[in-house]
Length: 303
Image 1 (tube, rainbow, N blue to C red):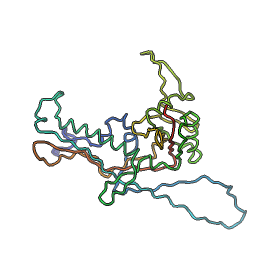
Image 2: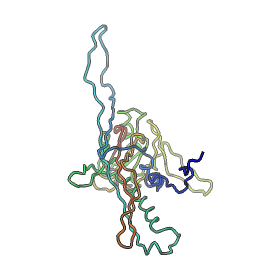
Image 3: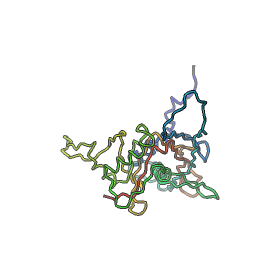
């Protein structure tokens, strides 16, 4: 039976722009790449979070006594707002008619750059976003990791070194609250403090790559008593010496999701004059499902 042209046969169909953006510079934007994807249905995005505290006293009952009841705690409602991210570009018709190196249409080239820029901006907001509701015609802004992680935030005195003992204390602080199974498994910090993590020795082995005889000294993962932690150096993590000082994040990967109200799309704008204008635009926010599984510390000495 003939069905006409089907998507399986259509070689001209485009893949999702979100998929293409997710593939752009994953090493420079690990959080957008590694965090799960969720769907927002409104500009104010809400979900619930349940936290079961550990007991602080012995639970015992008198034999044969009537049952007594205490007030139950409902799950907490968490909220973030979607943020519109827009990357614009414009190419003259003369430029598009020019024979350029590589043979690619200059408009397509600028669109690809805008896609990378869009992802860079989302990554930066995920870390550094400060909540703004968008009232009175102002642009809304999502809360980022730097303002979300508060349960296990410690501001160290200026000049404190990020030592192995200091790091393990950060892990223990979270483990005592949520248990080993829920402790953060990603450690994200600036590039200079990332070098400090490379000096840890408990779970690292220096070795020589036999192919080029280079001594390898970078620790990519660290195993503490509470599990394995992958280490990432990041350009967008606050690292200035000024207050609050260089920052270190311990993140539970499964606790975070990027929720899209509008997935990023390419929009070609109305033509005015002899130029083609376009933009990449989408709306996203950050979900934090288990905030207490994460940690944040600041004020460390830059090596």
